[in-house]
Image (tube, rainbow, N blue to C red; front, side):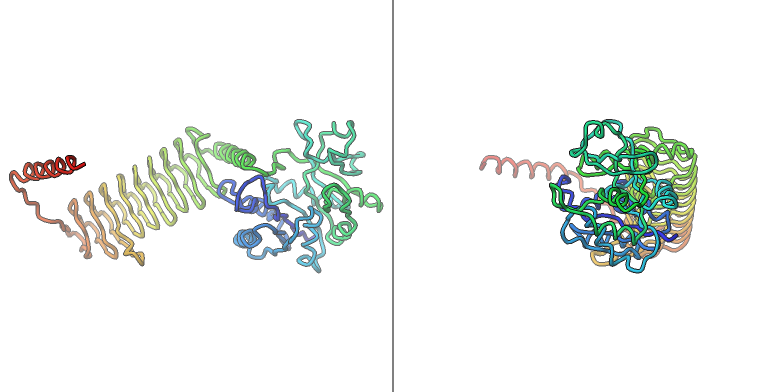
Length: 451
């Protein structure tokens, strides 16, 4: 049976107090919407429809960046969840199969839960997803069950005291045949205090037509929704805790797990050691047996086996570090290849560059890669010794086994085995320091007197 996803992402999220649409607020540096899309993608859906509203263009752009086949349906007015799903009708025209309705602000649904919903569809016309709440709360509708049959969903404000005591509550997610789903939605009424159309009516409507409805159960943590900045922080903390635990189980050493921040796509091999206060941005892969020392920041980079990074190092997008490389304190690497055994240990910037095997980059070295308009590349060969405080003005090449003298400004290519020296001749002028200081002190005294 084919599957389609309808992901509701139209809400403004007033309590977020933000110009950014709610579903684009990030968890582990990925928009919440993308988390929901990735969960649904495990079903290999034939179609994915994102229902947008507030900030529609920005939401659509983020959805398309994740899946360029995703279709966009716009909910011009936010008139409830059933009204939102109805906006996907045109995008699903001609589709035959099951529709799963997800929410862009509910990022933690496990793919296995979605698979169980599809399996339940073999026996039931409508499948809702519920969870047992730890504490009785008024915000959730209660799932009224008769054995495996879902009788109805009752909102807390409309429930009896007996119903309010029920802990099996509605998550809002559902699975249903596409044609039946839209048929049921056409019967949903807006005769309620909000004047809106809600998916919660579907269970009662299905039963009134002699159809079979059920609700399956998942862990409450999967249904964690985000409506405020506090919710966002809690969701991010939950994600980080899960991701750190997974790394520990995979054989990664986290010296202070609670201080390590991970992106959703961070990949770290076993026997890697991560010291405290390390931040991983998007697009980082660290191979087995590397060491990432304290207070380092990595983004869009690849670190090979045996490399030692930091402390206080910054790896930016395009940094490619081969095995047994060394990148030390207050070093920044951007769009550069650092070959096996090369070292950049102190206070240096290497950008738009290639550094050969076993080369040593001295403290304070800078590849001057930007002329104000364009970026240029620096190429440094193998077994090169770059003296401290060398400025490499790109485009420039330093050949194998060459050397630059401390304080050199390299503006021309350096041949293999050559020594480059490019600095002004030192001249000492006896007594000039005293004369200069006396002159400056006198000037300051005159200025202070006038003040």
